[in-house]
Image (cartoon, rainbow, N blue to C red; front, top):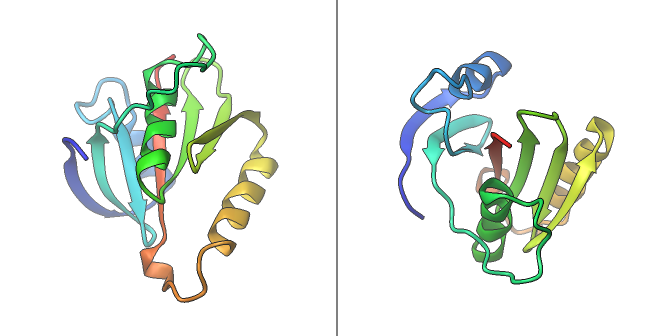
Length: 131
């Protein structure tokens, strides 16, 4: 899937804030969250090639869509500038979500996973946005 830096740290607010600090080298790119841990940071994800996307969607939103087209990942994009939240799954993106709606989308997405999957096989991708 590209380049990344292995982290394997317990998921916490403080660790996410540290990773996404613009002065830190890992700030650019995505964070992969798996099993309650940050598995990797500074991840560069595949971009969607959908031709009819809004011009407002930049590289980070296109990466969120792209990774959900190519994998079973769920992507969350939070704009650094506006704080707006977007949720991507199965190659589709929903923008301008509030916190409660995001939580609902995440719960629904995880519950819809095949019952045969163990919880350890569910991964969530968090994508940081500069613009």
